[in-house]
Length: 168
Image 1 (cartoon, rainbow, N blue to C red):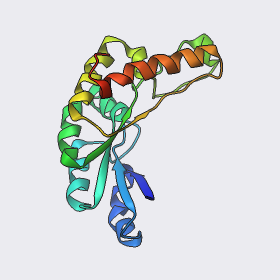
Image 2: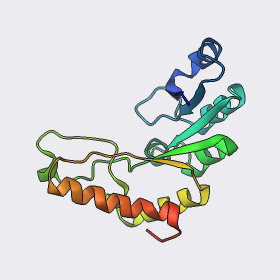
Image 3: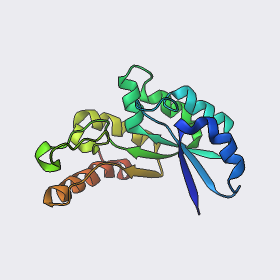
Image 4: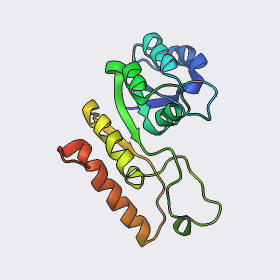
């Protein structure tokens, strides 16, 4: 099936977009983080759930954690706002946790692989596991060398706990 995902900072346009798009197109919205002017609070997620009944929700965990750390709302409020419309999770940690020597000068990101966050990420993955998502997107950056392969293997093992009942 064809699908479209829209960032929630476009919330003021989603009603018009919903009307303009083919009715059989799968549509989802994704919460935003601290850098966005809008679309980054649980209230805005809940509003999208109410106003867009045919749309699914994607929880971008790194963005929700950014907002939690900014004192806006805890991650659990975003989960509650998505309710039974939560279909997918984008899983990453909202910081640059990569070794500087591996990524090169000037590299920066706000989506690091979860396993790099250690114990904090284990608690976070336990929260995600309770949600039982059908679809998890592994976000992060991987250098094209043996270290990149090692990072990818570690992240895959870490995220496998979401699906197989193991502990991360």
